[in-house]
Image 1 (cartoon, helix red, strand yellow):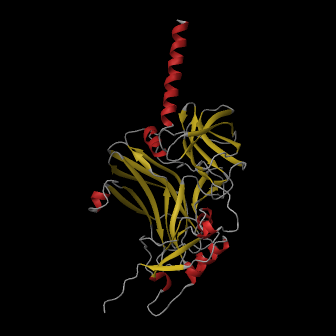
Image 2 (cartoon, rainbow, N blue to C red):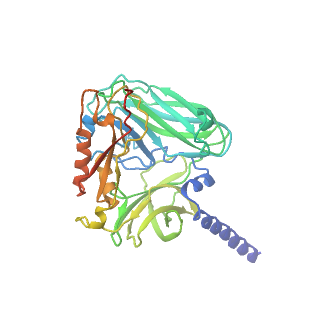
Image 3 (cartoon, one colour):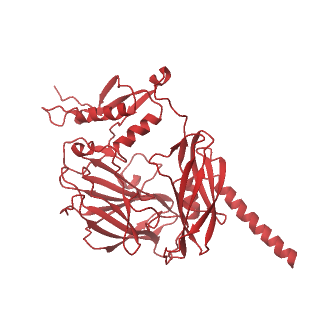
Length: 433
């Protein structure tokens, strides 16, 4: 009997080991499909007050008269904490941002059926303390067929639904039922826009965002965030980096051990495995069986390249965010003759939509313009080309304005890049005759 039990334990350990090994061969979206993960950090319990919300981002347009005043500003949703200890997402009413889309991370739905999308929401005044009378917030719920680049809207978007809600000053729960189709990756967008591009928006607060099948019970996943105190996760060989880890894990032990499997991008080859011990936060209260664990680890990258990280707990992958980084060669401040030959496009305007009725050129932002210039510089470019359409420099038929181009060039010169030898206007359509 004893030998049978020992054999059974060995078999189960082997099965778990195989599962862990299989995970190492998958990219993050495939792991998410296998584990049936939905929205990351919808409870907003992960993240630090005043800092960007892990798993969420904003894409928007800013007013050029305001946006260039503070190029270092990051237009991101941030974590706020109430006196009760509850955390929630706040998308501030940023000056210069009259329109944006707020995104949680995408998720995969494995079967046909009906899902319920639910969340708590409220409005707060903008940065000046003013509450605006603005259009309702649009919740866009969709999936796209990656095999169809052309065709009707219904063909390209098998599921495309929208709902409008008008949050007030107090928290209120919103819930919508939507029919979905299997085997697609879905996205949710919260769209907010003003009636006038010169006006700002109210702040938007969201909490407890969930997507679940109507015929399935609620089950919280283990979740983890890996972060460091820098906006661009770019490291250098031998540099010591302090990684912060927050994890919501099932259990109530005083401590929990996790593994960080650092893998090279594309080839998904495991390059390093780090053992990390986390300590439980005794002050954290949760009703879903999870405890909050936190910890730090000192890490020194030893290889060049780009990497991603898989978090493992109890031999299973953890739904995680962060851990993506690049290790680069340090660049001299003086631009070498070789680097002077390397260049690219900077801030090329794409064919994005704009809801606000304005002739102003839409500037698409995911991060501060200063951060974009830093990222461009880190690529090692020594020169480049500022691409712009005619609308960017000619807001009115009888008026030319190069202030936006000048601001872009100043940002790049700040990064010790050479002046751009070519400015190429694009997308110009000459009138008939």
